[in-house]
Length: 284
Image 1 (cartoon, rainbow, N blue to C red):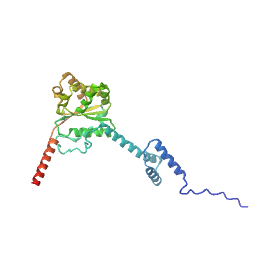
Image 2 (cartoon, one colour; image 1 turned 90 degrees about the vertical axis):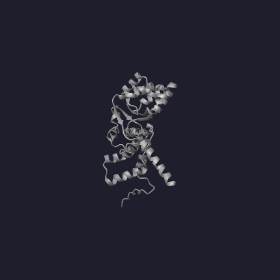
Image 3 (tube, rainbow, N blue to C red; image 1 turned 180 degrees about the vertical axis):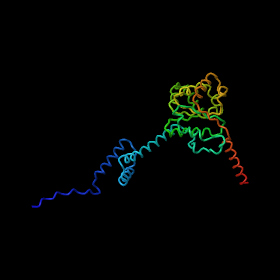
Image 4 (cartoon, rainbow, N blue to C red; image 1 turned 45 degrees about the horizontal axis):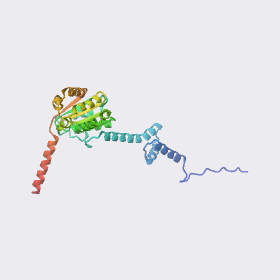
Protein backbone atom coordinates (compact mmCIF):
# COMPACT_ATOMS: atom_id res chain seq x y z
CA UNK A 1 0.00 0.00 0.00
CA UNK A 2 1.44 3.32 -1.04
CA UNK A 3 1.83 5.72 1.92
CA UNK A 4 -0.19 8.89 1.65
CA UNK A 5 1.85 11.92 0.59
CA UNK A 6 2.09 14.80 3.02
CA UNK A 7 0.48 17.94 1.64
CA UNK A 8 2.97 20.44 0.32
CA UNK A 9 3.00 23.84 2.02
CA UNK A 10 1.14 26.38 0.00
CA UNK A 11 3.30 28.82 -1.92
CA UNK A 12 2.86 32.36 -0.69
CA UNK A 13 0.71 34.37 -3.03
CA UNK A 14 1.01 38.08 -3.67
CA UNK A 15 -1.40 38.73 -0.83
CA UNK A 16 0.23 36.36 1.66
CA UNK A 17 2.89 38.09 3.81
CA UNK A 18 6.27 36.36 3.93
CA UNK A 19 8.64 36.25 6.90
CA UNK A 20 10.62 39.09 5.29
CA UNK A 21 7.48 41.18 4.90
CA UNK A 22 6.70 40.72 8.59
CA UNK A 23 10.27 41.57 9.58
CA UNK A 24 10.16 44.68 7.37
CA UNK A 25 6.94 45.84 9.03
CA UNK A 26 8.44 45.27 12.48
CA UNK A 27 11.63 47.12 11.51
CA UNK A 28 9.66 50.15 10.31
CA UNK A 29 7.68 50.06 13.56
CA UNK A 30 10.92 49.99 15.59
CA UNK A 31 12.25 52.97 13.61
CA UNK A 32 9.06 54.88 14.31
CA UNK A 33 9.28 54.08 18.04
CA UNK A 34 12.90 55.24 18.13
CA UNK A 35 11.95 58.35 16.08
CA UNK A 36 14.55 57.50 13.44
CA UNK A 37 13.54 59.10 10.16
CA UNK A 38 14.06 56.75 7.22
CA UNK A 39 11.78 56.66 4.17
CA UNK A 40 10.26 53.21 3.51
CA UNK A 41 11.78 52.98 0.03
CA UNK A 42 15.27 53.78 1.43
CA UNK A 43 15.09 50.64 3.57
CA UNK A 44 14.02 48.57 0.57
CA UNK A 45 16.82 50.03 -1.58
CA UNK A 46 19.37 49.30 1.13
CA UNK A 47 18.31 45.66 1.52
CA UNK A 48 18.34 45.21 -2.25
CA UNK A 49 21.87 46.63 -2.49
CA UNK A 50 23.02 44.53 0.47
CA UNK A 51 21.80 41.37 -1.27
CA UNK A 52 23.23 42.26 -4.67
CA UNK A 53 26.61 43.46 -3.38
CA UNK A 54 26.83 40.94 -0.55
CA UNK A 55 27.44 43.48 2.23
CA UNK A 56 29.09 42.26 5.41
CA UNK A 57 27.14 42.74 8.63
CA UNK A 58 29.21 45.83 9.46
CA UNK A 59 28.72 47.31 5.99
CA UNK A 60 24.99 46.80 6.25
CA UNK A 61 24.85 48.37 9.73
CA UNK A 62 26.96 51.39 8.65
CA UNK A 63 24.83 51.96 5.55
CA UNK A 64 21.66 51.58 7.58
CA UNK A 65 22.73 54.21 10.13
CA UNK A 66 24.35 56.64 7.66
CA UNK A 67 21.09 58.14 6.38
CA UNK A 68 19.46 58.91 9.75
CA UNK A 69 22.80 60.11 11.17
CA UNK A 70 23.29 62.53 8.27
CA UNK A 71 19.72 63.77 8.63
CA UNK A 72 20.18 64.31 12.38
CA UNK A 73 23.47 66.15 11.80
CA UNK A 74 21.93 68.48 9.22
CA UNK A 75 18.99 69.19 11.52
CA UNK A 76 21.35 69.98 14.43
CA UNK A 77 23.42 72.36 12.30
CA UNK A 78 20.30 74.12 11.02
CA UNK A 79 19.02 74.45 14.61
CA UNK A 80 22.31 75.97 15.83
CA UNK A 81 22.41 78.43 12.93
CA UNK A 82 18.79 79.40 13.55
CA UNK A 83 19.44 79.89 17.26
CA UNK A 84 22.54 82.01 16.54
CA UNK A 85 20.31 84.66 14.90
CA UNK A 86 22.79 85.81 12.30
CA UNK A 87 21.67 89.00 10.62
CA UNK A 88 22.81 88.13 7.08
CA UNK A 89 21.89 84.67 5.81
CA UNK A 90 24.31 85.00 2.88
CA UNK A 91 27.32 86.00 5.03
CA UNK A 92 29.70 83.05 4.72
CA UNK A 93 33.44 82.84 4.22
CA UNK A 94 32.79 81.33 0.79
CA UNK A 95 30.66 84.29 -0.31
CA UNK A 96 33.19 86.93 0.83
CA UNK A 97 34.96 88.86 -1.94
CA UNK A 98 38.57 88.07 -1.07
CA UNK A 99 39.88 89.87 -4.16
CA UNK A 100 38.50 93.30 -3.28
CA UNK A 101 41.06 93.93 -0.51
CA UNK A 102 43.45 91.13 -1.38
CA UNK A 103 46.49 93.16 -0.32
CA UNK A 104 45.22 93.89 3.20
CA UNK A 105 42.82 91.06 4.12
CA UNK A 106 44.40 87.60 4.12
CA UNK A 107 41.91 84.68 4.16
CA UNK A 108 44.23 82.34 6.10
CA UNK A 109 43.46 83.61 9.67
CA UNK A 110 39.72 83.46 9.03
CA UNK A 111 39.86 79.92 7.69
CA UNK A 112 41.77 78.94 10.80
CA UNK A 113 39.08 80.56 12.97
CA UNK A 114 36.43 78.66 11.00
CA UNK A 115 37.75 75.37 12.42
CA UNK A 116 36.42 76.46 15.83
CA UNK A 117 39.66 75.58 17.63
CA UNK A 118 39.70 79.00 19.29
CA UNK A 119 36.29 78.21 20.80
CA UNK A 120 37.57 74.89 22.10
CA UNK A 121 40.45 76.79 23.75
CA UNK A 122 38.03 79.47 25.00
CA UNK A 123 40.06 82.20 23.32
CA UNK A 124 38.56 85.53 22.31
CA UNK A 125 38.80 87.32 18.96
CA UNK A 126 38.50 90.99 18.05
CA UNK A 127 37.98 92.49 14.60
CA UNK A 128 39.07 96.13 14.71
CA UNK A 129 38.92 98.61 11.85
CA UNK A 130 36.96 101.24 9.98
CA UNK A 131 33.44 100.59 8.74
CA UNK A 132 32.75 99.07 5.35
CA UNK A 133 35.64 96.59 5.20
CA UNK A 134 33.60 93.40 5.67
CA UNK A 135 34.15 92.75 9.39
CA UNK A 136 30.50 91.86 10.03
CA UNK A 137 30.38 89.56 7.01
CA UNK A 138 33.51 87.72 8.11
CA UNK A 139 32.57 87.36 11.77
CA UNK A 140 29.20 85.90 10.77
CA UNK A 141 30.98 83.58 8.37
CA UNK A 142 33.25 82.40 11.18
CA UNK A 143 30.26 82.04 13.51
CA UNK A 144 28.32 79.99 10.97
CA UNK A 145 31.34 77.69 10.47
CA UNK A 146 31.52 77.21 14.26
CA UNK A 147 27.84 76.18 14.23
CA UNK A 148 28.71 73.53 11.65
CA UNK A 149 31.59 72.42 13.88
CA UNK A 150 29.09 71.78 16.67
CA UNK A 151 29.41 74.89 18.87
CA UNK A 152 26.55 76.91 20.34
CA UNK A 153 26.81 80.44 18.92
CA UNK A 154 24.89 83.67 19.46
CA UNK A 155 25.20 86.78 17.29
CA UNK A 156 24.01 90.16 18.53
CA UNK A 157 24.83 93.77 17.79
CA UNK A 158 26.09 95.96 20.62
CA UNK A 159 22.96 98.13 20.44
CA UNK A 160 20.64 95.09 20.63
CA UNK A 161 22.58 93.63 23.53
CA UNK A 162 22.54 96.83 25.55
CA UNK A 163 18.86 97.42 24.81
CA UNK A 164 18.05 93.94 26.16
CA UNK A 165 20.25 94.36 29.22
CA UNK A 166 18.86 97.82 29.98
CA UNK A 167 15.30 96.44 29.82
CA UNK A 168 16.33 93.51 32.03
CA UNK A 169 17.88 95.93 34.53
CA UNK A 170 14.59 97.82 34.68
CA UNK A 171 12.43 94.74 35.28
CA UNK A 172 14.97 93.08 37.61
CA UNK A 173 15.76 90.12 35.32
CA UNK A 174 19.33 91.18 34.57
CA UNK A 175 20.89 88.15 36.28
CA UNK A 176 18.97 85.65 34.15
CA UNK A 177 19.69 87.64 30.97
CA UNK A 178 23.41 87.70 31.69
CA UNK A 179 23.24 83.95 32.38
CA UNK A 180 21.56 83.48 28.99
CA UNK A 181 24.43 85.19 27.17
CA UNK A 182 26.91 83.27 29.30
CA UNK A 183 25.46 79.95 28.10
CA UNK A 184 26.80 80.15 24.54
CA UNK A 185 30.19 78.75 23.65
CA UNK A 186 30.75 81.68 21.28
CA UNK A 187 29.12 85.08 21.71
CA UNK A 188 29.58 87.54 18.83
CA UNK A 189 29.06 91.21 19.71
CA UNK A 190 28.99 93.16 16.46
CA UNK A 191 29.07 96.90 15.74
CA UNK A 192 30.49 98.01 19.08
CA UNK A 193 31.09 101.75 18.87
CA UNK A 194 29.06 102.32 15.71
CA UNK A 195 27.22 105.67 15.78
CA UNK A 196 28.08 106.09 19.47
CA UNK A 197 24.86 104.28 20.41
CA UNK A 198 26.29 102.82 23.59
CA UNK A 199 27.23 106.12 25.16
CA UNK A 200 24.35 108.22 23.87
CA UNK A 201 21.38 105.94 24.55
CA UNK A 202 22.55 103.62 27.32
CA UNK A 203 24.20 105.41 30.25
CA UNK A 204 24.73 102.08 32.04
CA UNK A 205 26.59 100.66 29.02
CA UNK A 206 30.01 100.27 30.72
CA UNK A 207 28.64 98.29 33.68
CA UNK A 208 26.25 96.21 31.56
CA UNK A 209 28.93 95.31 29.04
CA UNK A 210 31.28 94.42 31.88
CA UNK A 211 28.73 92.05 33.43
CA UNK A 212 28.43 90.02 30.21
CA UNK A 213 32.16 90.00 29.46
CA UNK A 214 33.05 89.11 33.04
CA UNK A 215 30.45 86.30 33.19
CA UNK A 216 31.98 84.77 30.06
CA UNK A 217 35.64 85.24 31.00
CA UNK A 218 37.47 81.87 30.76
CA UNK A 219 34.09 80.13 30.39
CA UNK A 220 33.51 80.76 26.69
CA UNK A 221 34.78 82.68 23.67
CA UNK A 222 33.69 86.21 22.85
CA UNK A 223 34.11 87.80 19.42
CA UNK A 224 34.00 91.58 19.37
CA UNK A 225 33.66 93.64 16.20
CA UNK A 226 34.46 97.32 16.64
CA UNK A 227 35.68 100.43 14.86
CA UNK A 228 37.27 101.77 18.07
CA UNK A 229 40.84 100.91 19.01
CA UNK A 230 41.17 99.51 22.52
CA UNK A 231 43.26 102.55 23.50
CA UNK A 232 40.23 104.79 22.86
CA UNK A 233 37.66 102.82 24.87
CA UNK A 234 38.01 104.98 27.97
CA UNK A 235 37.37 108.17 26.00
CA UNK A 236 34.44 106.52 24.29
CA UNK A 237 32.65 104.95 27.27
CA UNK A 238 34.00 106.93 30.22
CA UNK A 239 34.31 105.31 33.67
CA UNK A 240 38.05 104.46 33.36
CA UNK A 241 38.21 101.81 36.15
CA UNK A 242 35.29 99.83 34.73
CA UNK A 243 36.52 100.16 31.15
CA UNK A 244 39.97 98.92 32.19
CA UNK A 245 38.42 95.94 33.98
CA UNK A 246 36.36 95.14 30.86
CA UNK A 247 39.38 95.50 28.58
CA UNK A 248 41.34 93.23 30.90
CA UNK A 249 38.87 90.45 30.17
CA UNK A 250 38.35 91.30 26.49
CA UNK A 251 42.06 91.36 25.65
CA UNK A 252 42.84 88.23 27.69
CA UNK A 253 43.66 85.34 25.31
CA UNK A 254 42.50 87.45 22.38
CA UNK A 255 43.49 87.26 18.74
CA UNK A 256 43.12 90.78 17.35
CA UNK A 257 42.74 91.23 13.60
CA UNK A 258 43.07 94.81 12.35
CA UNK A 259 41.29 95.71 9.13
CA UNK A 260 42.52 98.22 6.58
CA UNK A 261 41.71 98.75 2.92
CA UNK A 262 39.03 100.10 0.61
CA UNK A 263 35.44 100.44 1.79
CA UNK A 264 32.90 98.09 0.23
CA UNK A 265 30.11 100.53 1.05
CA UNK A 266 31.79 103.43 -0.70
CA UNK A 267 32.59 101.19 -3.66
CA UNK A 268 28.98 99.98 -3.94
CA UNK A 269 27.64 103.51 -3.53
CA UNK A 270 29.92 104.75 -6.31
CA UNK A 271 28.84 101.85 -8.56
CA UNK A 272 25.17 102.58 -7.88
CA UNK A 273 25.69 106.24 -8.69
CA UNK A 274 27.39 105.38 -11.98
CA UNK A 275 24.53 103.02 -12.90
CA UNK A 276 21.95 105.71 -12.16
CA UNK A 277 23.86 108.25 -14.25
CA UNK A 278 24.12 105.72 -17.09
CA UNK A 279 20.35 105.06 -17.00
CA UNK A 280 19.56 108.79 -16.95
CA UNK A 281 21.93 109.39 -19.84
CA UNK A 282 20.36 106.52 -21.79
CA UNK A 283 16.78 107.76 -21.19
CA UNK A 284 17.56 111.40 -22.12
